[in-house]
Amino acid sequence: MEGFWTRLVLQVWVALVLAFLFIPIVLILVYAFNTSNIQSWPIPGLTLKWFSSTWADSEVRRSLGLSLEVALGATALALILGSLAALAIHRMTWFGREAVSLLFVLPLALPGIVTGIALNAAFSFGGIPLSTLTVVVGHTTFCIVVVYNNVLARLRRTQGSLVEAAMDLGANGFRVFRDITLPLISTSVVAGAMLAFALSFDEVIVTTFTAGAQNTLPLWIFGAIRLGQRLPEVNVVVSFVILVTIVPVLIAARLTGGGGTARIPAAR
Amino acid sequence: MLVYFASLVLLLITAFWTTDPFTTQVVQFWNTDNFQTIFNEPTYRTIVGRTVLIAAAVTATDAVLAFPFAYFMARVASRRVQTLLFAAVLLPLWASYLARVYAWILILNHDGLLNWSLQSIGLPPANIGYTNVAMWLVFSYIWLPFMIIPTYAALERVPESLVEAASDLGARRWRVIRDVVLPLALPGVVAGSIFTFSLTLGDYITPILVGGAGSSLIGTVVYSNVGIANNIPFAAAMAMVPVAIMGVYLLIAQRLGAFEAL
Image (cartoon, rainbow over all chains, first blue to last red):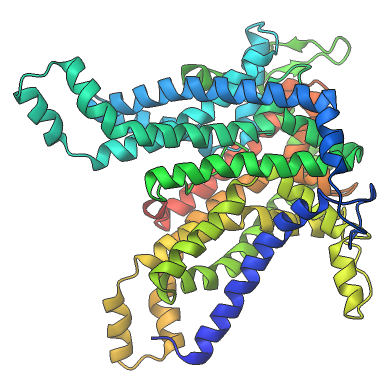
């Protein structure tokens, strides 16, 4: 329908926007190999030395350990609670179902800072000291939402007739769940978990408000950038985080056929 | 979930308490001092004004950048290119947020990529690092995918038959876009603007990292009141400002039919 010139202008525009989106990301990956410890462009040469010095940094390793611990904990909790919530919301037609499903999306719709400070206020009100556990609870609030959304979307697309057929053939509730429902939703559960992991691993805002003295990897990065210290190590860590967050998302996209990864703003 | 909502309610209540200036203990006494401070103190009025202004500028920039892109994706590109572009928009969205902000620090740096490019084409260096302009640019960059996706979804749904009908009735291409495509795609753009607007209102990472001395936003105030000043009731009151602004914004968005486009 569009004429030649319109197409050309649109193509140039798309190319420019793509460049705008990708140049910064590629640049970070290049800077990780910078020989100089001064961050200027063009970089004088390529080296791998920062990778080994970053790996040797005990502070970075401790933060990495904590980030993995939190991400795995929050993902595990979200996996169980999110799937159960989706099953409950899908199966039941009780009063207030719509309202409840809206409430589940709220942690993603509100700015992360509101979630963060709300949890912070609640913990201090309840006299609960901030610890790794409070960070896990904080991350679980928004991780639940991605698992819930993915599982619910899958449940809505599957036919109820399969479940009914199994029941007609004499399967009991547990058998139906194990042999029909679970295989049907399994990939969406895994996809949700992947996304939850990626979200949690990179989260800064809720973490800031729910962590005590501990540093997760994003908090370490934030501190280092702010002080302008150890930037060569920051380059390496940041490139690593990009990879760690993108790989689970690619797996999730595979599992759900692309849908479900078009995330609503994550808690940030 | 219960924990989460209990916390939200508690936050609202906390906003009406005060901190004892001598003991820095939270005094559980109902008053509206915190809100009065925000309204009457010129500093906070400026900060709220600046935040809303930047959020609006970011939203407008992203809408302008996203619309032709989404139009190409939805109505010109082949199926294959469409899938590739969709993936190309999603990847930066998931790539670490901090990494992307940090990338811009490196680019806008005095010896960064921007000034190097400017110099190589014979232009004087631009020193926009650590200014409001830098914040505007970085926010526009970070939230752009959030604008492209709903705009694309809305454009996808514009029925081909309406476009053909308009052309058959003699409307020229620009007329068709202005009178048929644009009004039908508007809910998508508004849906995207909910994200770009709300995310800018609550952010403190970007202002702290790329903003300069006079670049405090609402988020920065909340952050420093929790972390440094330890005045949680005031931070809670300040956090209510974006919630209130978004409440009004969502009402307008609902009028424009943005919720169906989400």
